[in-house]
Image 1: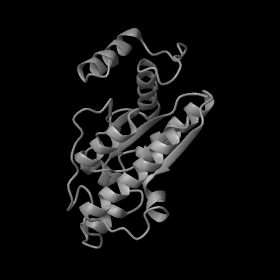
Image 2: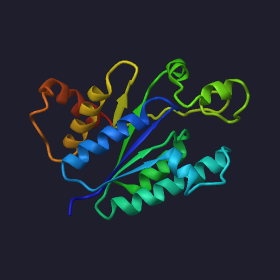
Image 3: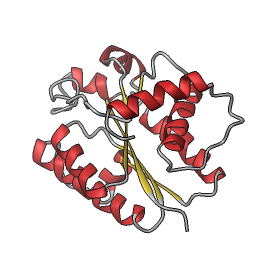
Image 4: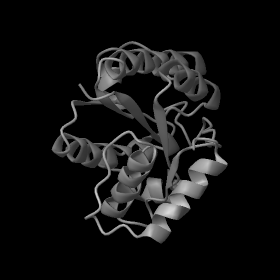
Length: 200
């Protein structure tokens, strides 16, 4: 059985979390991993139905996702979480609980997310129809030590996926593949970042 781990996508709504989590799921399945995706929207409708968007309820929601992710990871599953998870303290708490935790921060400007707005949520938030909406009238606390920072407005999803996979390879979470065209210079940049963050 392969060792489990958790890849946690965090970022504003419409920053690209779901797109990348689906691409990563496909890539890990192709490499023979058992994979589960815990999408924040789906969790809200099931495991966290009834919770509000207050800070306390948001934290409760993230704790629940973290609990399930930890159960799956320790049983050999590659867990992919796609959740806004706006508050640093609860992200750090979940990281400590899970242990084998790789944080992917989608650093996408608010104006780009508003322009994308696939679900029309920003439009409603700006009109006052949704309260406590992250990035509008509720804060997003930017991660300080994410293993990977993705600027989804500057690169394609495939480019972002390649960087994530190479980081997982360097960290020893997945077997290395060398036919993906990723240069040694690019690998060295990733290694330096991970070393500076204390992961290597």
